[in-house]
Image (tube, protein in one colour):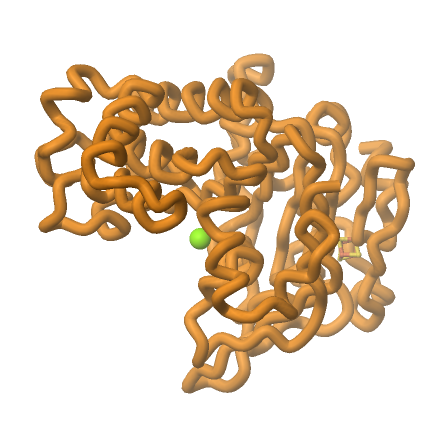
Length: 324
Ligand code: SF4
Ligand code: MG
């Protein structure tokens, strides 16, 4: 197992009180595998990723419990300099917004090259040559001519490729991509997603793909973890989920996605809104929105039931859900 997150908890201090952004998340990623983490915004996907990467803004965010085992070591117990070595060299992150993640006043080649200078002790000249290679690898046309250009001289899609190149630079074992294509238009989204999937195969990396878009998941992910109110509510091989979800929230997400095979059928968005993280409903956090909810759901928090060896569902009535 490459990465295993156990019972991770993160809180934020806000004006409205303590926001419980992550409430006991558990999940794992095997070497070379793609895990899609799915959920509406505010479900705790990004905060979980930031806690795993060790880049959570602290304060106001605080990790209050859990373990993040990466190749067997608990990252939450490493010193900051050890942590920094892991970040970049062993695991790297691709963010949604390349423009604010890149330095606007530094040529992209220097930013890419910096990885090799800092982590590999390369000369600036060698590092720049490596930067050109990387830009080629992520298929930026005319890399040699463009290596000295600044981020604003690239299109959104090309900038996202530069972010991917940066994450790939040190050939990490794991990449976490947080909504990597959300800011791009639809055709460019597909190209960037294909590139990411292809590079993952080629470099044999684990990939965690955070998204609110179930449409992109089916093609690239092996497994899926669905998050709601800071918990994983369903985890399963991706095809099982498409066949029959074992959690009403997953079902709701599936029914709100346009699918070719369901063409002409009405789209159902899930009624209601996700809860405020300062005021998570008791029992099952999804109960105010759930069509299957009954009394026990309002009082008893469902554990993650074992649906099969490879599947879990945090729903008291997962069998009923599975039967549709
Ligand atoms: Fe719905 Fe109850 Fe299952 Fe929660 S535990 S998802 S409220 S049926
Ligand atoms: Mg997010």
